[in-house]
Amino acid sequence: MRIFIYIIIFFAFFDLFAQLPIMSTYAVSLGASPFIAGLAVGMYSLSNTFGNVISGIFSDRKGPFAILVIGLLSTSLTLFTYASIDGPYSLLAVRFIHGLAAGLTVPAAFTYLANRTESAKRGKGAALSGAFVGLAAILGPAYGAIYTSRNDVPQTMFLTGTLILLIGIAAFFILRQTTIKKDKAVKDAVSFKDILKNNGLIRSFSGAFFLMFSQGVLAYMLPLKVEGLGLDSQLSGLLLSTFGISAILVFLLPINRIFDAAKPIYTLISGFTIMGASLFFLSAVTIEPLLYASMCTYGLGFALLFPSINSILIDSTNVSTRGRAYGYFYAFFSIGVVAGSSITGAFALSPNQGFFVSGSLLLIIASLNIWSYKK
Image (cartoon, rainbow, N blue to C red; front, top):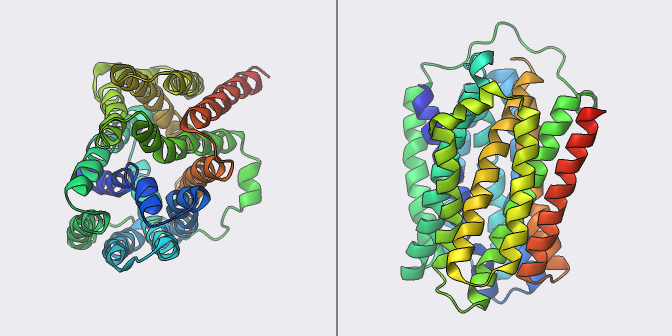
């Protein structure tokens, strides 16, 4: 049943990535100010945070099956409500509901996988799940940009919702025979204060936050940069797909052995450094081939970072605490997207300024990880 969980992970991230090239421009088309447009991009992730935490708690207490199915079905229903949007504030409301529902799925799915992966293979296992995330990053933005250019945003969301509804129905019948049987109930749940004392989890959570901070900046700023350069609006989706292609090659080719051979702290630092440098480059380039080159490099950094923070989380938890840890982990993912899109929108940064700020933060975090590890 592992392959079916990978499919669920794919569609959960497909939903996320399909929104990236269309949401900021859609908000502007509804009359949103720069701040409201940035908030519309980030609102999904803001409410996603609450869904992540709820999912983690129930995955530890009851197992991930029920919360996984509920997450898929409720996400599909909220995607259908995009047809009712009539202005920027109704967009914010729908984005909040969408993010809350979608937040239930991913922590439960990753908890299911982590509990069935041998410790010695957790790096390669994280890389394989990352490959499905990368595949979603390839197909999602291209689908979102191209399908929306021929139809509109509500129709794009309706089709996505239909696909997720079918996956949710299939999950109910396929996974109910393989639900996790816990050896014993979790009597003493791990508190957030306890988590803050775990250096591995702090490193993993901060990695998740800043990884998605850069994604939030890309989601908001890349379509605007493409538009400002006078290039085809579909290019933003193709550029986002490029980083997914770069990442998935790393995940699936023999180079993925590095994730079990090398300490995850080394690949984490390398990932942050490469991503930061690529965003600097993206802020400076103005021609299409160099835009593709910058996103290809960004994908390489993403491919190094994503399995690293997953491996560090697995190493820092056990079966009875992993669900909640993954809940907080993906909550930091969500908060990062909110911070990236909202802060750049609030300060009315230009796309190039946004990429420069995000790149600087990633390099600072790489330096802090080097310092704290040596210490």
